[in-house]
Image 1 (cartoon, rainbow, N blue to C red):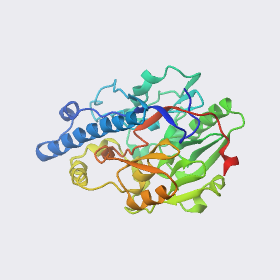
Image 2 (image 1 turned 90 degrees about the vertical axis):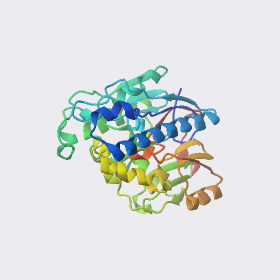
Image 3 (image 1 turned 120 degrees about the vertical axis):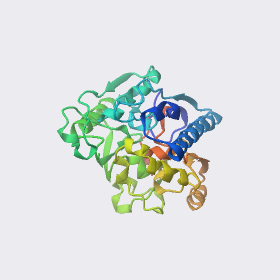
Image 4 (image 1 turned 30 degrees about the horizontal axis):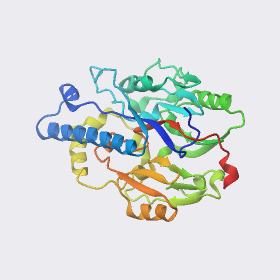
Length: 341
């Protein structure tokens, strides 16, 4: 089992899960219509994830699901469900790197995929102690005693790996250093590229195949590596500020947000972030969250089959299609794609 890129044929992957509303509601102050809204969001979200699993199986992709082994709440706040599993681990070659988290409300999420980690040559796991339980705004990652790193900062392209320059509150310098050392221990000739963005890299760039990418970044913000690649640019139609993704996860349970999101369920997902946040089946087939006619037309001119998978309720948790999946195996060998473009 190995993964060298974001776009070689997908053979197996993990899909995130949501906690049933009945387990959460006793621990939060939702009544009347807010309670109904929340139950509906969870119900539809679970249905959407199950549908995603069926879509992947239709492409002969073997699927697994994350498992919530931990309590639904800390006694004060709701624990994060094991949905955004892209943040937790990455595979390079047949080697596994398990990242970590900083906060008390998501400290156990990294263990939700342990049951699928059996067939890799080596595993490196960052420590999970020193959990932060204070206000999110006061957290300073580089003052943490332990290394911190989220694997959502990373995009793999064979011989080349791209990493977000600014890790916001999901990583620190020590974690970044260890991750790069891990990559180099696997491939001494690897090329590491810093991308001048803040936060998770899959909110800015999607590698469709060698020589073709999607992005909403200006050309000057892209690494020189992509100079000769064809680029499909996505307008930031909704003016979504990506830095908002780092806000309190548990605040998403607030009844006002639930009410707003219930209304959003009646619309179509066309946000820039969630169109970038897609999943490659192979170099000619990509799964998308919702539909975007102009984007699909552009990609189809490049011979890309665009498949819409509705995840409108799932995005309540600020997770797109790439976020809620994590590949375990892609068919193919280590390639140097710089020589092909």
